[in-house]
Length: 181
Image 1 (cartoon, rainbow, N blue to C red):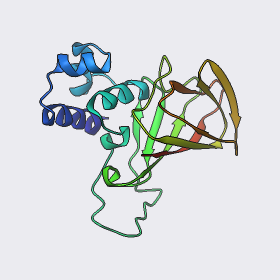
Image 2 (image 1 turned 30 degrees about the vertical axis):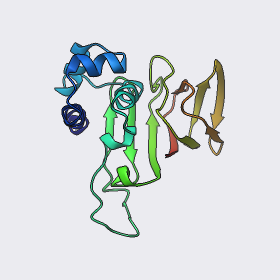
Image 3 (image 1 turned 135 degrees about the vertical axis):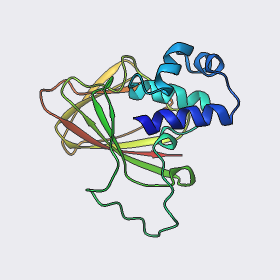
Image 4 (image 1 turned 180 degrees about the horizontal axis):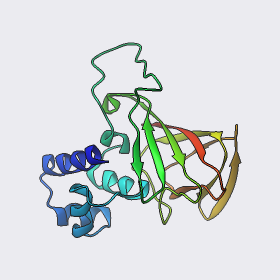
């Protein structure tokens, strides 16, 4: 999560925003943003979405690594980076590099039992999303409705409408999410 914290600071400084200005735009306090940037706290996925929305960046920009121009891009399972969000009880695993220049942003989201992306539904700044449950059972919430999705179930949705992912089961759940810009 330290790299994510550094990226947030880097993008904020590139846009010449103060902690207070970015915090207000994201709907979080300047002190919370300072703690995130310094790596003192592990933000939820929803909080990262809010920060990225205020910065006008896709969330995957926080996890991006240059790909070195390889085509095709192969990311071996044992070499992919995983970022743990203690607040969400989630592991986020980017499945592509140099995401700022791609139209699709694939990631694996693993939610521990009781984990959720945010305390409240959150929204993305643009695009469309597709997801398929690879393991376990997960609940998808959007527009006040809660949908139970089991292994193999897929969903296509507008991420600009507030939504949330929750694992209400007693087992780890894993979802492949593809964000299209």
